[in-house]
Length: 450
Image (cartoon, rainbow, N blue to C red):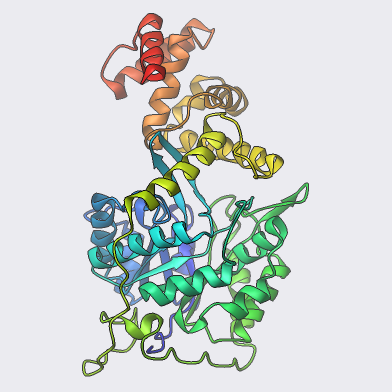
C-alpha cells in the first residue's frame, strides 16, 4: 500500500465557526459534514479555503453502511457529487447502522453493528457497492457506543482487520471513540490499536466528551480531555498519521480556545518519531485495490492485485441482520421491549440520548417551534413526550412537521394564540389542514393492522 500524502492538522468546518476557521493560523485542512452542504451552493467560506489551497474532505453521516439494506443509490450519488464539488481526494463514512426498513425507523444517530459474521458479510458487500459507486476512495470510521451487542463473535480488532482485508477500504480512527468504548464497553484501546492494520489508516479524529454516572458521552461539545490526547500519542507511537482532525459540533468555544486545542494536537503529532506501519503484502487489504489510494502520490505504473472478492451475500443473511437491528432500534425509539441479552440500563440511557438529540436537532431545523411553545423548556418537555411513542421515520424536517401536527390534533398548545401561530406555521410548510383526530386514529389503527 502506498503511504498517504501528508494532510497535517485540521478542524471540522461548521457554519458557526466558519470565520474563526478561516483565521486559524497554520490550519492544513478541513472536513465538512457532507449532508450539510449543497454542491451547487457551497458556502463562501469553504470556497475561500479551497482557493487558498486548503483541502476539504466530505464526511458522511447518513449512509448506514452497516445496515441490513444495500446502500441507497441516491445517497451514494449525493456523497459523490459533494466529493467532486469540493475537489476532495477521498470521502469518509462510518461503520454503523442508522435505520431499518421493516419497520421503517430512523435512529438519527450512528449505532454500532454487531460484530458477527453475518453483520461483517453484509457490511463488506455494502462497502464494495459504495466503493464502486463513489468517484473517489472511501475511508470508514470506528464509532463510539453506549452499549455492546450480546453474542458477538469477533473483537473490534478482528472485525476491522477483516473488513480491510476483504474490501481494501481505508480506516478513519477516532481516538475519542476508542476512549468512549473503553469506558462504556470495557475495550482496551491499546489492544485495538495493536490489532488493526494501521497501514490502512487514512487519518485520525480527536474530540471531547463528558462522563456521567459511569457512561462516557461523545458530545463533540466539550474540550478534548488529556486522556484522549494520550490515546493520540499511543497511536502516534505506532504510526505517523497522515492527518489529525479536531471535531467540535456544539457549544463552540472562542477562537483562542480552538487554536489552543489545535496546538495541543499538533504538539502530540510532532512529539517524536513513530514506528512505521509494515506494508500490506500482496493479496491482503488495500494492497489489493486498483483505484488510487486517497491523497497518495500518483503512481501510474503501479499495478495492484485485486481484492479477493467473495460471492454475494445471501438474502437470508441480510434478513437475519435486519431482524436483530430492527428489534434493537424499535426498543430505542419506539418503546418496544429490549431484546434479550442487552444491558437494559444502557439501552435506556441510549434511548434517552436519542430522544434528546432528536429534540435538539428539530429545534435547530425549526427554531420557530420553541418560540411558539413558550421557550426551550416547554418545547423540550412537549417534544420528549411526543417522541416516546412517535419514532422518526424520515428526516428531521418531516419530524418537525409531524410533531406540530401531533400537538394540533391534541388541541395543543393550550394557549389559543400560540395554537393559531403553530397552525399557521404548520400550514405554511405542509400546505394542508392538519387531519382531524378521527382521521389520525384511523391512520394509527390501520398502521397497527398492517
